Length: 155
Image (cartoon, rainbow, N blue to C red; front, top):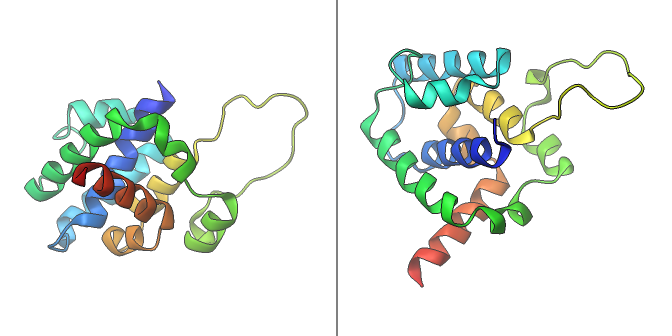
């Protein structure tokens, strides 16, 4: 899986959630929680979830889908510029509830088997909270990205 692609799609999802004007209903929140569970279990599932949303119980919220598409298209064009807008480790520790993170046990010498993808990790945490929309408003990197995109659209 191509990390820039997954980051673009996940950031687009987070921005779409952040921009929703109507709150998600209970069923939609439960479906997002299930998507978060699937991503936590198998991060490679995102491409499948995107291509077959009905199979993965992705919310059938037309506003969310429309906003996602808009953000995805804009992010795809400007991906290289986004790297400097992402959160620092200190910001993530402050903004994302630590009790949701996976516990790390032990330390192994050498190269890791997999690279950690912080965008994926944050997305899983957001999708598994009781109120994903409110959680996205607490993430400063999303505000920076949204401002960057809005500035680009107004030019």
